[in-house]
Image 1: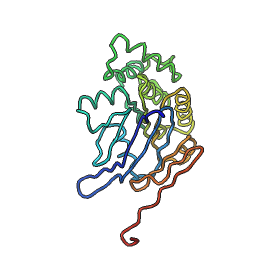
Image 2: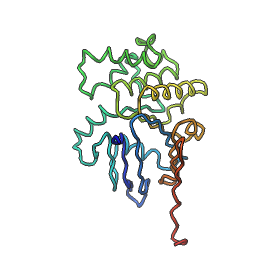
Image 3: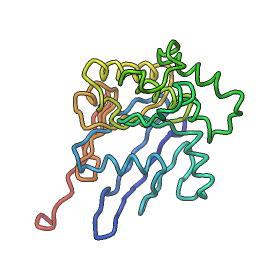
Image 4: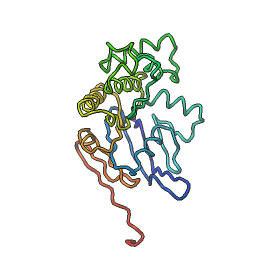
Length: 240
C-alpha cells in the first residue's frame, strides 16, 4: 500500500487565551483522491488548511506532507516543501495585475528550482491544460472571474505538486463559472492530480468522491462512495 500524500495524526491547535481551533484531528489523503473538506464558519477549516499547507504548525500531533513530518523541518526546507509539493488555489485568485497570465503561472515555479529559461514553456503548457492557451498574454483585468480562477489553478498545478489545496475556489464566482471551475478540478483529478477542496457548501462537497465534515474543530464524518465513518460527539462535562 502506498504512503499517503497527507497524514494528520491526532492533531490539535491551540491559540493564546485558551482558544482551541482543532481537537485531535486525524486524516489521510492518498494520491489520486479528490476530497471535499466541508464545514460551517468556525468549524476549523481555515486552521486545518493552514496546517495542511505548512503555513502553521500543530500544537500537538503530527502533520506529514509527502512523507515528511513538517514539524521536523527547518524554515528553509519547509519553504522548499511548500514550493515544490503543494499547490494553492484561493477564493480571491491572488494574481498580480502587472503580470500576464503566463507570468502569473510562472511564479508558481520560483521556489521549485525550475530554471528561468524553462518556466515560460511550462506555464504556457499549464494554461493550455486549463483551457486558456488563447489567453497567455492577457493580464488579470482583461480576464473574466472564471478565467482568472483558471489562471490560479494553472499556477497551482504547473509544478505537478503532490497535493493541491483549493480554498473555496468557487466562492467569488457566479453559478455558471463556479460550476465550470468545479468541473475543471474534477477533470484535473481524473488526470491524476490529488486535490483537497475546502468549502462551506454542502452541495459542492456532496458532488465529490469523498467528503470530510468538520464541526467545532473535530472531524464528525468521513464519507466516500463505498463507506461512511461517523465519529462520536465528545461528551460534555455534565454528561460524564
